[in-house]
Image 1 (cartoon, rainbow, N blue to C red):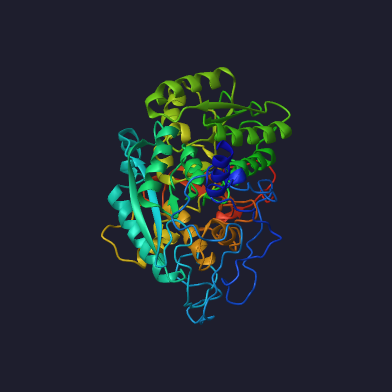
Image 2: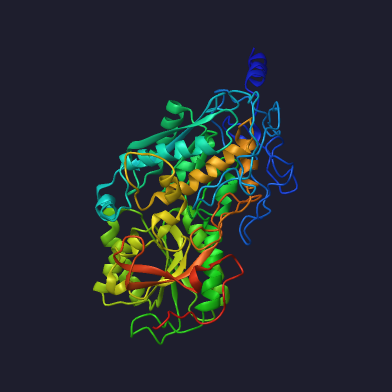
Length: 549
């Protein structure tokens, strides 16, 4: 009887191998495979992007599935196959402009041209997908009073109404311009009832992931501003749901969640390699010339500040190893902190005191953008003026955040910026979405942070072809042609083993008196070299110099 029961169990619940919990297991996408899913290009030409980022995850074999969950729900696509549905005709391409699906002034992320199409799209090819609709959830944590008090006045903490207005615009923009193979995107704006960004609770975020999946059965979930809760992405991947967000996570995190996890923003390893290259070429083995008088003549001794999340510490350790290899003197140490506003004053008081006592000349901010709000006043209060170096992570290089930091402490801040050069929202992709859609509310300054993930999601939905599932979506995103790389648009590039987009940086310094083009207030990050952006291996050598200082 026991043997018969076991046999029956094997028949009705076959093993999924490495996938671990029931989610479909898909083979790795490799650069040697077809460049795009059959039936999704107009001319049969390659949709291959610009390759992978040097020094990060390029060429690594992806995990063969990232955990279990979401079975049933119409997941009828072929796991691991091309998963395409035969179209009835090739259609026309008169709507395309310059090989792109559409042209909207100021919008850089338009995907490759696809012909008009009609035919059987396969209907419910995966959960959250029907013959007529693709369900996408945009997630925001519960409003934190402490964070809202800091970020709200600067326009950096949009309300649920502002989010909903922009998502309605983005939904309209996507449905009107992208080839979605007979379907329309349905955006759901979900605000957590219990999970806060500070202090973050992975258990809470994991429970929210389950709630979203059981309630809405989405194909994809987007949490653009997730800086401190990787468990949210892990749980969604475990449940078999495409998910976006979680910046500064190491490349190994991304590949371990394949083919479910993606991010528009730079991964932690690429950030570490670029910051390490910058430090070694322009700062290492030289005096700390932009520190206060007590430290200015001393050789640089660096401290890397990072959240105590294990995944973020891994990326910081990568940066530390690069600096230690090139620096013949002080090298670098790592100091962690808990991303909790309730502990911020105590933590930053201690961190400032310890750095001062240790003779640290140069602080490297591999942190969330709120942390310096608390740390910089403590540094000033202790009459301690090290160099403050931004390494590009987590939107620290955004003007309205820099304006929140201690003016005396931040006066000579410098470093790298992932964001495009500072400008009004009208120069960015989100500005183009606002101009070309109708809504109830005006723009908020950080809307472009949302648009990055939405642009990649929409392009992936188009390039996946009629049969939409994680396998076709993975191939679609990882073969997107690169875009951007100009002053107001970062270079966005995916590839085999590379699940994050932004791939270049600008060299910046803080000017406390120049007015920001973002909000017109004093204080702005000024880009050197006329806003030129650099990829790995391109940063210049020589002593870093702030003009006129």
